[in-house]
Length: 184
Image (spheres, rainbow, N blue to C red):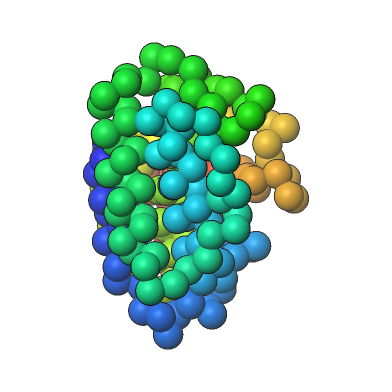
């Protein structure tokens, strides 16, 4: 599932026209350009962690440029290969003194790229590519791990947006992570 979400996200990055980079996204802190830098920087950090190393890069320093797509694809390959080679049943580091369970980082990665992929699709005027199965899997994972203290202004996730239980899984996922679904 993670490989599929990352591949679809990479395809969105490829398809996002540079003419859209100054447009806003549903993520209030990011226009498309800033979002692309964020997505690449954090994917590179997550890849370093999955490989078993201690990341020392500042993911928020990454900026979008002509190499955004190739950097993201390279990082996703490293990330998936790191999990395949070393497994997820271990502790990984997001930086000095910031250790978390590998399984939690897998959930964080799936959540990050499904949510921000939807943000990118919205800002760049592209269709959301994720399947109901991918969104349902990510929703189930994030419902188990996202604590209330991580919701609110400046905390990474908004408050839950009510979405009908019979809505598509992508909409329910977006509502749970604090986004207003495009169809809602």
